[in-house]
Length: 259
Ligand SMILES: C[S@@+](CC[C@H](N)C(=O)[O-])C[C@H]1O[C@@H](n2cnc3c(N)ncnc32)[C@H](O)[C@@H]1O
Image (tube, rainbow, N blue to C red; front, top):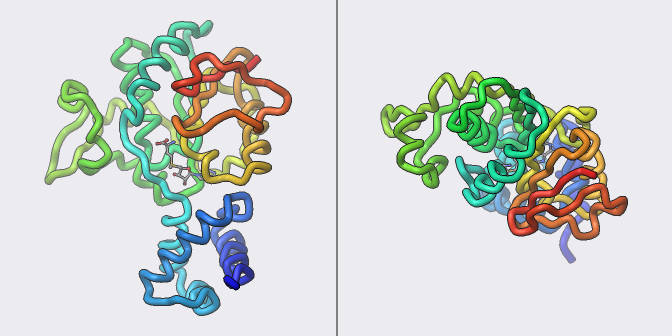
């Protein structure tokens, strides 16, 4: 028998001390990531690891970094961005659109949106990136990236929008100034019909089904009528939109329109 009670206690401690709502996430992936952190410390008993977490804020932070898995990169799934351009940008009925990258990691996704808008000559728009992980948001505001983050950026864009210094890629300050960032928990957000397009990519996948349903409802309230929602390539709407608020527009690229 695994000591799931100890894992539950670890999840509760992280929620209490850092606010990460681990109880809403799929249990087995969370447990695997906790075990990964335990192994890194040479600990095999979750009760001992719990004790370490109670004593060490540094380890608590290291665990949260593992649990939130804020892996992202610029132009992730480039075909999705092509379709965003073709479908969403071309049908906007406002000349001051607003975009939300919900679960934006270190800013790679909202900055990709800003680069695309810049290339297409937009000058009036709002982009907000939010994440529960305050370290990721600090990195987003610095906008300095390693090779991994920019590996899929086309050469021309790399040359135009990044400067290389000491092997790091510094994003053009003009693009940086176009994106606002906030630290918040998506489950606590309360935006009302605020956005033309919401990117919610690679976040739902970590959540339990009831939490996916709950989050989708919260997100749907943040989108303007006829606005768009873009999910990650491995995420689906199946079984999580009981009121059928969303109509598929491009199923392959996971683009949906609010009815
Ligand atoms: C795998 S990354 C996806 C980043 C980006 N959307 C992409 O697709 O490349 C998931 C992000 O969601 C954030 N996240 C997870 N749960 C969250 C929550 N409840 N509220 C806000 N952000 C959350 C994580 O911290 C992480 O940065």
